Amino acid sequence: MLAAAALLSIAPHAAALDRLVTCPTELQPQAIRITAAAGWVPRIEAPLKLYAAGMSAGPPGSSQTRPGKEIHKDKELVSTSYGFAPDARPNHVWLDCTYGEGGEISISRRLDERTRECTITMFKPVPGEPRKIEMKCS
Image 1 (tube, rainbow, N blue to C red):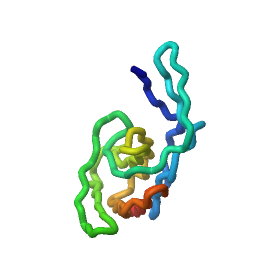
Image 2 (cartoon, one colour; image 1 turned 30 degrees about the vertical axis):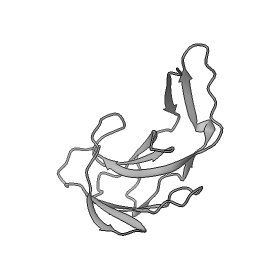
Image 3 (spheres, helix red, strand yellow; image 1 turned 135 degrees about the horizontal axis):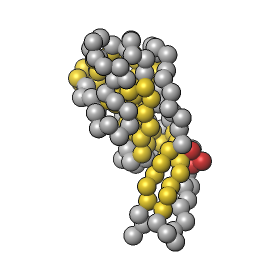
Image 4 (cartoon, one colour; image 1 turned 120 degrees about the vertical axis):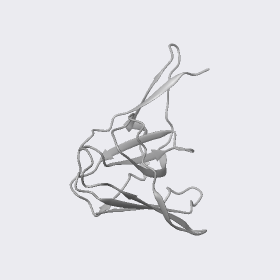
């Protein structure tokens, strides 16, 4: 059995207050580092496509995923709203982007502390294409 831990070489940084934020549509193989068990040689053959997006209240690994409020749903898309209290602690607004067939790898980006609301709209997947996701924050 292959025991591997996937680590990403993505530099963390704080973003300016964004009106429109985005997740990269795919992660390139050279941006991903895998540490495999002794004797195994890892290889990533193709980019990993965007799977989903959400919000969290802390940096990666903090397990502080924020539940959103579904504001629209039909057969073509689902829109979810996330609110942030003005008196919440610093470092509390993070955009989480997941990649792979089921969201196995994620990257996160801290948004400006002045962010009060974000809406994420995920469109119906099109086979073979990166998933279309729109994010707007204010």
